[in-house]
Image 1 (cartoon, helix red, strand yellow):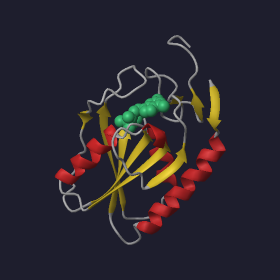
Image 2 (cartoon, helix red, strand yellow; image 1 turned 90 degrees about the horizontal axis):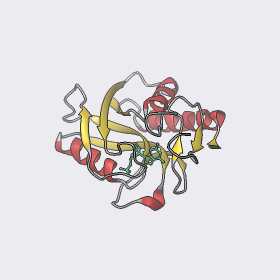
Image 3 (cartoon, protein in one colour; image 1 turned 30 degrees about the vertical axis):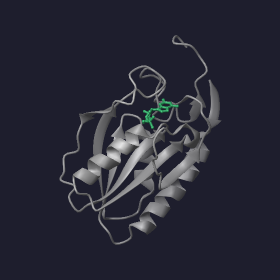
Image 4 (cartoon, helix red, strand yellow; image 1 turned 90 degrees about the vertical axis):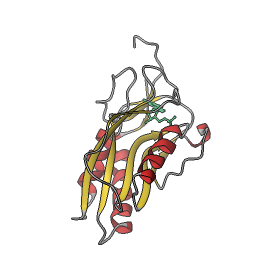
Length: 174
Ligand code: 5GP
């Protein structure tokens, strides 16, 4: 594997993005919705840097990938959030936006539930890989079309614990 973004660079950039979110939601209640499993580490780092007293956290799990490297396009909710989001301000926290299919689904889902404001925050954005339009309001890093692991991102459920982001270069048994 090849390190693409080191631990300190991630920390510095996440702190900047947290500051931006704080300022955009000053004096407003908002919910950060962590999309499991990939966004767990990113959400924790964001949480440590957000100063607002009006933030709460929810966790949701969706699946689309299985053990493959490209989205199947079929998104399924594996775990839903526990609160009513009607009239609430939501920031969806994703590890990576690739084809945009997952984000399109999630934004539609929260719209249907009557959320007031829906923003998208992603650690990584593979802009060139979109199949559908998906806006990222808060993006930490743009990356090229490479399969990445670490900092929450997996390959076949492994490598989520790496404190940096790396390009996965191996075969199934690496
Ligand atoms: P999309 O629906 O935008 O195609 O894909 C979003 C999801 O696909 C992400 O939440 C992530 O789980 C997975 N994904 C997309 N690209 C990568 C990648 O390079 N590495 C890993 N580990 N997962 C990816």
